[in-house]
Image (cartoon, rainbow, N blue to C red; front, top):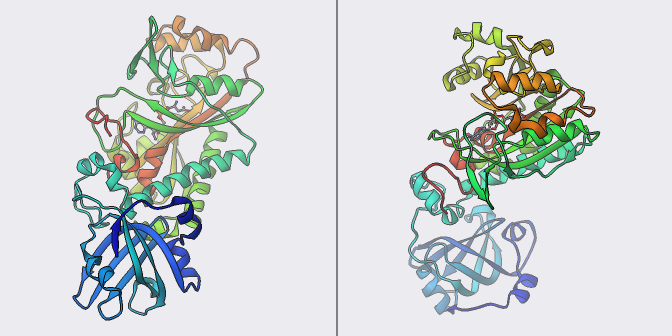
Length: 438
Ligand code: AMO
């Protein structure tokens, strides 16, 4: 009998079996709940594929055996409707996974209306439409796989630095002045003042590393009012940042290489199904160090220029499956807080680096300026007003050690590891110039 009805949730949770456990154990009678992936009517036999968080199982109705009402209505349930199925489990060489459920009762808990997008894993629905209906897009195993991997990236990052006795810190999202340079800020009305959404936790993590806390990390959202519309930029993204006292660019590059290896190693271990589903060719990366000077020569580009997306792709071709550190960039093209070589105000080169992985920049960082006078001069050179950075500059007047750090873009790394063309695939609810909903 098929009914649309409310169900006793307490009772259900005690009795419900997860699909993956149906395959693992020898159950005779079970109750499962989930979404209708698909139905098929072969007249004497009908199939309903039921999907829950753990897997998919075939429910098989047989005209001569299944109760008439159940059999007749099985193929009338719309796709993605939420159903409860009670029945017996049978081994079957033809059923996917080797087991099927012979239904005795099917209850439709909430029928789904006609779907707005194709939710199959072979969906041809274009990305913008899928993003408009993200709640439905998340019914797809492929979409879920990307975020399972993203969760593992963030978790592994946390675990890696917890294991090294770093302090996890929570930093403000509202700031009173720029932390990366003059532009790219979203302003917010804050009582009678104008404040900004944080572009980066940069200045705060530095203050913390300089206090005797020494080693900090954070995962935090950042906002950048850049007008670009590319497949690698978002206006709201999440950064995984670290900052360490008594360290220079070399030390933090080594930490970064080890952290990325650890993240990939954990994904290889814990996300096997997702790797298969997304057909990823993932390997623990090698590490390569190239000075900016060497990189310029290697790629034949103009000295003093940033790397273009094409340059980054070329580096990946030359050094595949490698985290490539391009270090000691010219001061001119690094932010004001990056230490010039040898602590010299007019040094051409700096202690700043970028890391490129799978053809894209995943991180940048370096040693910071911990000397108040040098910092004041550098701010002026960059056209910024030191008065706006008074509290930040002053924080280095009371016992600030040399320190260094970096930031990895969480969505950027997810995009590259899961091999997605567009970074928006790696954000549940992307914020870009044209999208602020859902
Ligand atoms: P940077 O600006 O290079 O450095 O950012 C660090 C990393 O964050 C990611 N990222 C982005 N991802 C998506 N959309 C964006 N608009 C975007 N901007 C940056 C990239 C990038 O490599 N404070 C410094 C880091 C430091 O020195 O510690 C900073 O924010 O993966």
